[in-house]
Structure formats: C-alpha cells, structure tokens
Length: 85
Image (cartoon, rainbow, N blue to C red; front, side, top):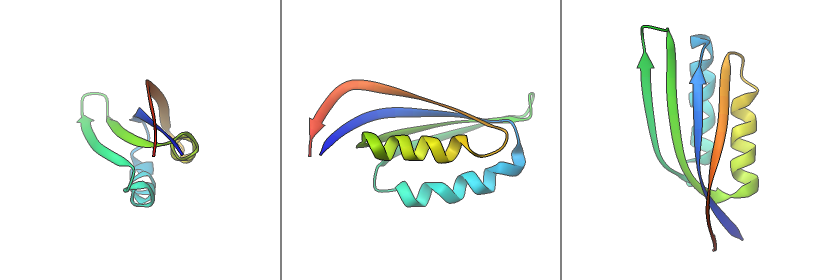
C-alpha cells in the first residue's frame, strides 16, 4: 500500500461547523501525525492544519468529508515522498 504525506489546510468560516469537523478526526487518528488550530478572532474564523501520513484514498476521503461541511474551505498539499507500507 502506497503511503503519502500531506497537509490538509482548513479554514472554518462557519463556527457552527466546528463540532461536526471535530467529530470526523477520531476516525482518522491512526493516520494523523499532528494537528494545529489557530482561532483568528479578528476575522471570526479558525485556521487548522492537519499533517497526515496515509494512503491516497484515505487522505481524499478525509478531505472530502471536511469539504462537505458548510462554511469550511479545505485544500490539500501532497509531498512528493512516497513509500510502501
């Protein structure tokens, strides 16, 4: 199985979606390397970065679930490093 390293960048514009967002992460905890969240009070948004080491389909599934939430913008950047598990 080919693993990819990626960073999922999330901007939460609708604070009502934060609880739903946080409920998604436990399903992917075995792949999540780290998480950083920054509340930006001046703009009333939250900025979150997720570092993940997982198969491509898992990363895409997580990004897709996050992107379906209202008021959330998500982008994923992939490393060129690939490995076999």
